[in-house]
Image (cartoon, rainbow, N blue to C red; front, top):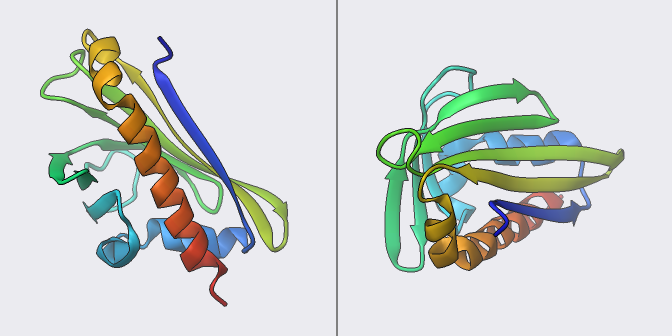
Length: 144
């Protein structure tokens, strides 16, 4: 079983606008159907507090920011309970196609003892949540 989820969407907007939408965590509750809240600073080594909505259930996890390349990329790594059980490396990549169009890639690589079993249960809904978030970013970023 594939232990990665990768989604892509074309957004007709500048990389700066897409980046600002993605990194303005305080605005997430107003537009984001998946990650409904992020608390903390987007700085390598800092811990975030992320609240996810999956169906009618909320999940809170506290990943550590790994890297930040403004207007291009950021990622974090989080674990369920303790590292090695179910870990996720989540990333956002902005590929500039031209001055007013980007490809947004959102993905996650999963590992750990129970990664395969957990992904069998939540893989499809997680992919759908990534897609819903990507579409919401597109709507916000394309508003001029």
